[in-house]
Length: 268
Image 1 (spheres, rainbow, N blue to C red):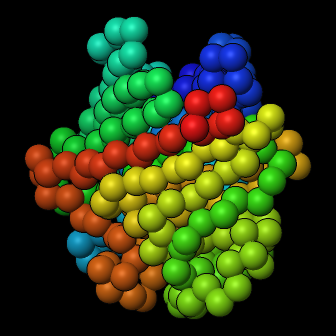
Image 2: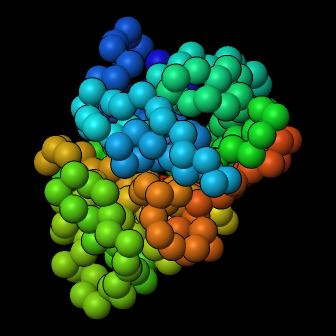
């Protein structure tokens, strides 16, 4: 199922993510539940094209986003289980170049649970012999009908096809941003999601997860996605330092962690 987390809940408390059961499905029409990895990029690449090291590379478009791509091919492939302990779980993907992504790479997810926290460490390594564009993200479907509260400092406005303009604006009224159907945010340190029965989930992330996507595709859930770059980053006419458009040399890796703290009246 593409490296997915299927169920995430507090024992004796509510579901944190919309639960799903293991089943087969068309890889381009996935269940809107659980959480899945976004690798080696998130969201759309305009016209299924990416500019890397002066070279324009054409990819296969996604049927739900034609003529663009969508969310990288990592979640459409089977992952391999590694460590599997009571509070730790690791899985990896060895990706062989194809029409969806013409570079070899290796990706890993390391989940670790404590009584109140989930910590996910993600990485992607360029295993090909040439420079590779690389980014990461994580796409959970939180079981919440409430607006997300974040401290993001910037918003990247986007068009009707979900591609951002090559500009960002300062967040002047946070309440207006969190109630948008889709918001591409930057400069955040935390995002809080209200859960049923007085519980909440507070998300934080390390570098390079400097961007955040908030998307409500259905009233029953909300997606809060830490990501390493703005959508379509490599194709924007801006310096990579502003967009997060990393280019990994052969053997180089991108790595970061995401943490979710669950709190509620019963345990602080």
